[in-house]
Length: 245
Ligand code: F6R
Image (cartoon, rainbow, N blue to C red):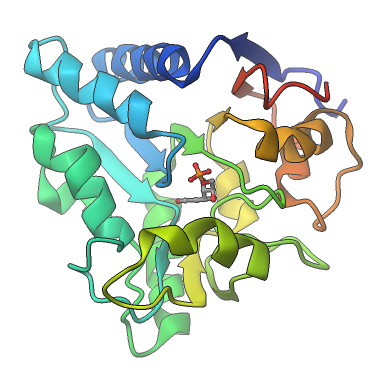
């Protein structure tokens, strides 16, 4: 396979334009396949796209009642209802504002006693469902989901120790409970199995990771670089994130 041959790169004015473009891509995909399976991300990057989707729902332009979702990751030992859990994030930013059914939304359970068993449970469900479109952000160190820089790519879900770079980027959100230093994440192998991948990155802090995604060596030291081997990736950037291309 020729790496990067099918990567479509869109450079847009700002995060809100990206939100409209990505949001409408998802709305169209849902309208085309109402029982679509989506892989979803948290963090700042997807918020404008989620807003576009729930606004489209409010206007009667889309329904999520048959949509199935799988989130990429969840913190370990953070109560599910903590405002910073990814479960809470997704309900606040998207699910509670639409007609999606709770039984159709899936998360890794960061409070499971046996994390290996929990990861296996999630991977089995993922395998059965098959992700149609996976939405991704990217960490400044090139992580996708919480697949941090490493010596190998992980196939399935696993428990990860977060790097200092990720802790520094996310600790600003934590006030009640301290930020967990571990998370459960879908593996790179599962992300790569999605039929289509849509990645959003904005701001200067992401420029190195984006340069590595587009032109760098494919290496687990920069996990996002693996996307060069996927056949259908769309990347949505602002000018700052695209500044090193
Ligand atoms: C979150 C996730 C992470 C984020 C990444 C970028 O579910 O999977 O990989 O996408 O840390 O975060 P933001 O968008 O906040 O810069």
